[in-house]
Image (cartoon, rainbow, N blue to C red):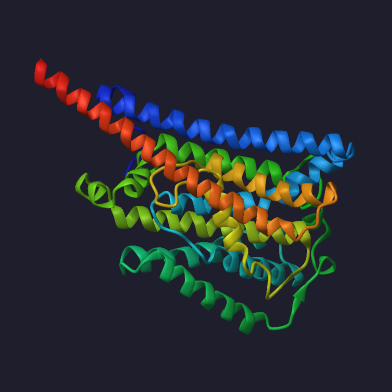
Length: 351
């Protein structure tokens, strides 16, 4: 099937107006996150003049890259009104698998491909169970989370991968870059742009939003629901696998506990970034901003002398605030759409 965007002229004026309104709402939400992030960083810079040095900016970007990658994949799933709680475990096991291959003298590029392929495998399992088995995503991915952790413990046990086991070029890639911009950030930005373009410009990408907005309506409209859900989980698994390989390059230290609990941070980043947990709205750019905001908080608090124990509490507050805002916006959007529908019916009646 050729995946091309529908011409804009094919949409009725009312649909185009509604789409434009929703796009403006989403852009305002993402702009608000960006403003909060910038103000927070500037305030920290005023308190600590070394915070936004070249190395400081590089550290901020490096800290965010892994979470941004996984958040992009998670956002793709959440848009369809599903969730993947196994991303943290998938990232951990793929990082260890890539490390084992590289420790044996393997090629770094092949090691990354192995991590991605393993992530895709777990994504296929999740996608098939959710789409074909009609099992709630929360139950499926919670189950696969524990299965992957169990496999991780059995397969690797107490073994550990350290930086000394990795090729020097691979470890350098995880730290170096062009000035303040690390290679990992450039790679993550490329993935982000491709994912955003796909979701916005291709029919199969727009189908994910239709599916999240109303699964039954999408089915009646001819959207291949099972195929789209499977695709979303494959993308999520692939990006979790890529994140695992980059985690290995970034930190150079992986064990069987890597990634435990990471899925909660990922979900928080996605929701804080404006991707509605009920599906159908949001963007990967928003998810990336949410991830950048959460990781920046982790750097800001110690920099201004605040104990790091507050990090999780602040993350939780941001999550609750994002859910509240999402609910208020959803009610406002619904009210505006009802008003416009009534005006349209009235215009047709009087025509």
